[in-house]
Structure formats: C-alpha cells, structure tokens
Image 1 (cartoon, helix red, strand yellow):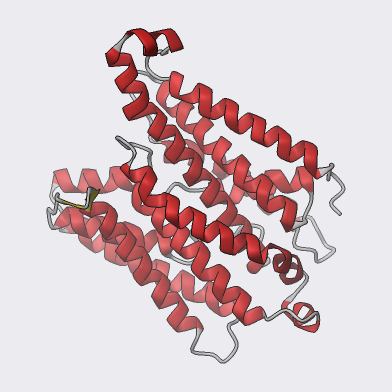
Image 2 (tube, rainbow, N blue to C red):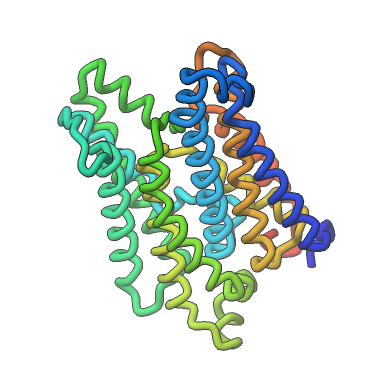
Length: 335
C-alpha cells in the first residue's frame, strides 16, 4: 500500500461531493455571474445557462473523467509514469482528420454532428487500427512494441498534419490551430450525447479489468504466472481507451496533461490499488477539467483562453516534477 494512502470510502465520498458542487456552481460562473434568481426571471439568462453553460460543464466533466481514466490505464499498462492518453498516436490521428475536413471546406453536419467531429473520430480510428496492426505482427503483443508503434504513428500523422497546414489558407490555418489548442466550445447537448455511449461502454470494460491492472503493474511475466491472460487484457484495454480518447478528442480537441496529472494526484492520496484508484481518478479528472475551464472563461473575461492552454501550463511543470521525482528513485519501482 502507498505510504500516503487513506481509507477509500472518505476519498470517494469527498470526490462525489466535490463533483456535485462543481457541476452545480461552474455553470453559474462566466463573463457574468448568473444567479438562480436570474435563471428563474430572465429567459435570456435561462437560455445561456441551459443551452451554453450547463452542457459545456457536463461535457467537460465527462471528457476530463474519460481522459483521466485512460491515463491511469496507460501508466499501468506501459509501467510508465509519464504515459498519457495520447501516447499511442490517437490524438495525432484525430487532429489530422479534423484538419483535413477543414482544408476540404466541409461544413455540413450528419445527424446533427459536425463533419469536423466525424473527421477527427475517423482519423483517430485509423491511427488506432495502425497501432494495433503493427503491434499484432508479433505473436505476443509487447507493451514496448505497442508503445513504439504508437510513437511512429504519432509522428506519421503529425507530419501529415503539417502537410495539410502548409496547403491551408490563412483562415483555415487559424481554424486548425484553434482546434489543436483543445476546448469545450459546445452548444447544446448533442456533443455531450455523442460521447456518453463511448464513455459508458469504455468505462465498463476498464472497470472489468481494473483488478488485472494491479497484476500488470508488477510485470507481465509475474501476471502470467498468476493466471492473467496478458495479451487479451492488453487488447481489451487498448481498444477501450483508444475508442474513448477518440470520441473525446473528436468533440473537444486534444486537451493534454489531464490524463497524466489526475492519476498521479489520486495515487498520492489513495494508493496504487486500481480498484479504488480508478473510481477516484474518474471523479477527480472530471472535477479538474471543469475547474480549469471555469478559470479559462473568467481569467481575462470577456475573452476566453482555450482550456487546453491552461492544462498545458499546469502540466508542463507537473511533468518535470514527475520526471525528476522518478529519476531520484533507485529502487527500480515504477511509482
């Protein structure tokens, strides 16, 4: 057990309470504070609250929760404290898909979903398929092989993204850059509804495999000796996390560092047992992204900073702290 671990029940109850508080208070905050009385008296304030702010907060909470739980899975599966949800190139594939639709000037919607979102999701799925294809060339799916395949696919799509930007005009280039910053600029509940099925499906699969993550963390050989089907577990977790990240990135863009910071912060509080850590990480990730988004809307109001910029400003120093903290350890343990 981690030396900073506390009883799981108080931690989970506290995070649930904070989640409810954040979801209740964050929609009231913005360029102008909207009180409950304003919502009841003014149709304009009510429309802003229910059409803009509430769906934005709910989307941000689920996106943050999804990114956080995927980061936890990657860190355990690769036994790497610096792994993130974008390690396997899903973000680069989604970014290329979105940039390509912008370059082609496709602005229509399909079933109410913008084509740029569908393009990002398609690009992410292609990247996921390539990583799996390269990894499955060997009889045994190695974590190192999958990681290297992800890095290669990420570089491939990053190069294609630069190619698209080079041939874009000034307007399209600005739109691509703005999308790459990541944000929660949603209107209405369609973006929220579009990611809910993926979050539910992937969360169920990940929850099913949480006990096996504890064994993977000790090493693949030891996990096999305990009866764990390592290849099957990796495949299930790979598809669950990749599909979840694809859905989130297609709606919100590549919001970085949420999936790296949230698991580490929760791990310092509740320890390394993924059955508890998974629940806490899911709740904390949602809280963290909603708070960052509220700050991005208020810090230089009436202007708005993309929330991806805020998370990157926080994630950079945190990344260095984790890196130097890990380098000082000579025991060979990953955490």
